[in-house]
Amino acid sequence: MATTVNYPYSYDTETVFGVFTRKDFIEQKYASVGATNFEFIEYGEKDGSFIIHTKRDISAEVPGFAKTFLKPTSTIIQKEVWTLSDDPTKKGVVAVNGKGLPMKMTGDIILQPTDSGSENILTYDVTVSIPFVGKKIASFLDVEGRKTADQEYEFAVKFLNQL
Image (cartoon, rainbow, N blue to C red; front, side, top):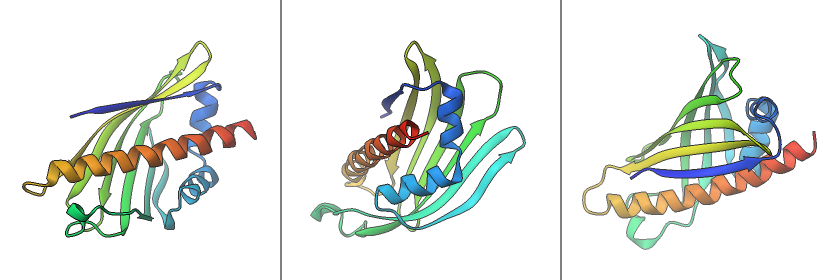
């Protein structure tokens, strides 16, 4: 089941995209949500795309039903690939995997102009390949992921307001 979240910004898409692709912003954003052991796997322009491929450790309070499959601290590998163009609407794809975990999140990202600035729209699916409890674990990961995304959004707004 696809989930869509929208994050409005009072800045144009060029400004927001410029921030989204800054190394210092990315590092600070993940630090702001408690990520540790952060590193870039790949970063920068390549073949008409902008790639942000990262690895980081995150911690979460794992519910009892999922403790057999999830650890309190997990390594997350995330890859965003944005298509570079002169169009004010920016489009990309994202994939998130937990190292050693039977889960993945894939989605589409659209950063588009609005009358009051811009809006970042993320449409994604979380899947867990574990029989019987996979959907329940996917639901837990979806809720945790949205909490983190909301915190990252709050950080992004503060960062933009300090430009």
